Length: 268
Image 1 (tube, helix red, strand yellow):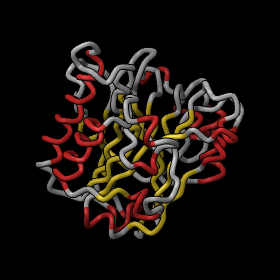
Image 2: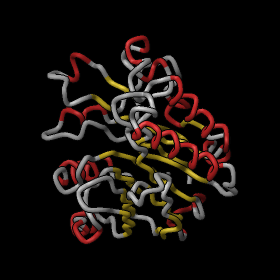
Image 3: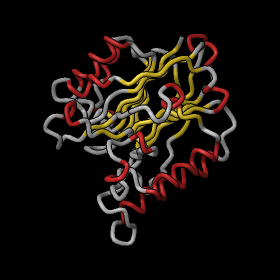
Image 4: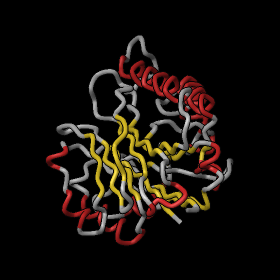
């Protein structure tokens, strides 16, 4: 078995104790981090190496955004797409290498941080919302040309299903669950026939959240969550998946991220 995890950590240096705890307790083979908020030279390589994660690929920038993929399995960087079209560090793609990858050798793992999109779901008054939709459209055109097993994970910043949010009715006009975002994400899904691994193992309409706002005084009691984080696989790769889980307890750790990790296991 090979396990892949994804987590918007909201500053890897600030929350390094949480990341090392997660790696020590859950021991995924690969961890994709989003919103690392640092440049490559500032990334805490040593902390990951000490836990056996010696293969690290980073696309970072100073203070904002940034993605990193850390692995116990050999990997090599294969792409950095600027789907935002403004130079922000929001994507990195790697290929799994060698016998340690087993049946997943040659698989491409895409780590992405989709823009949040601002507060108003109207691109005429909120340019950030338009940038988000355009980002997804560029991803869609890219997905149409995929010709090898691919897993794309990360913070998509969209909760597409009614059961992905605490209140479908109240969030219909809130960025992350608006109909135009859901439709745009569906076009991306259909461009490659992606399988939504989370919903493959936690079928709709079961409750499934990965994010709770910092504004909620008691996130667990109020439970006003949204599923903003995703792991989607090429159809053939999806058939190799054997399990998927959400580590909700991480939202209650000391100085937590507002997101929690997702983990998917694959037969190797």
